[in-house]
Amino acid sequence: MNKILQWGLLAVLSVCSSCVTKPSCDGTYEGVLPAADCAGTYVMLAVDGNRYELFEKYISRPGSFLTCGDATLDGKVLRLDNGKEFTLTDGGLSSGEQPLRLVSSDKQLADLYTTLQLKEVRQGEDASLKLYEKGGVHYADLSFKGEEYALKSVARTDSAEEYKDGAASLRLPADFVQKAPFVQADFTDGKNDFRFTVLAPASAVYVVADGEGPASFDVVYYNDGNRALVKLLCPDLAHCYTLPQTEASAKTAVYADDKVEWSIDNENRATLRVDGKAYTYKAVSE
Image 1 (cartoon, rainbow, N blue to C red):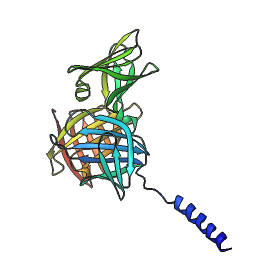
Image 2: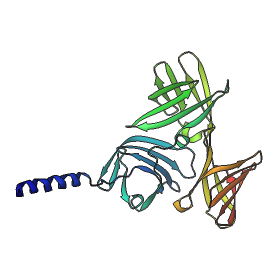
Image 3: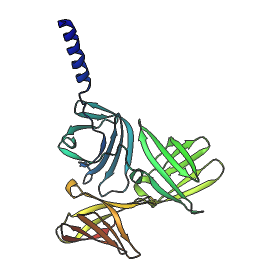
Image 4: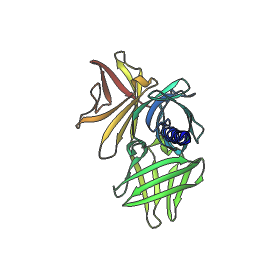
């Protein structure tokens, strides 16, 4: 009888030990990490088990970068296959002394952030382009005329990079990400040639003109045809905002949530309202 009780107790303990919740860091995080040659790097990190997507944007510089790959959670340390490491904290992650706050339970980054909206310059047709790095290799996913092209980088020079998927070929200037929308991309589907220009996202740097708000913002406007929003980025994460568009007309556009409002006019002047206080900003050339 004692042996039966002992075996029963062992079975219960075994079941209980298998039910212990393992730490998880699934979700989407954002933060600002230090950078040697600019005000900082804004990052969004989406984690889905052993997979991740990392979006990086140098503050006050054009262009953004997307990396995808494998993630490993070792205790409370999240290791990405690109060499970056983060520590699991209460309600977020950290990189050294820099916090990354949990912003949603989403395990993938929204296409709004990771995809460029394009316009074919001759026929005016819409297209979308997702550029990313995976395992040290550059990829380009192009959606155009109802077709999906999974293109892989096959040649890279100081002036251009070429991606191919069978007979389809995409050629991007080497500084395409940094200078969009002021550069164009050339594409052939194997039969016809096309040229694209970038519609969204668009960005500008705004500096404070009146008031005591943050000295400047790197402002990025996103629009995928279904929704529009703006990101106000600065070195202080507490003053980084993501706001949906609430109003739009020929003269003004307003982005707001229940605490913060960003409004711009057609002369690139902007007003930031936070906690009842208003600060005026003006756009400057990058």
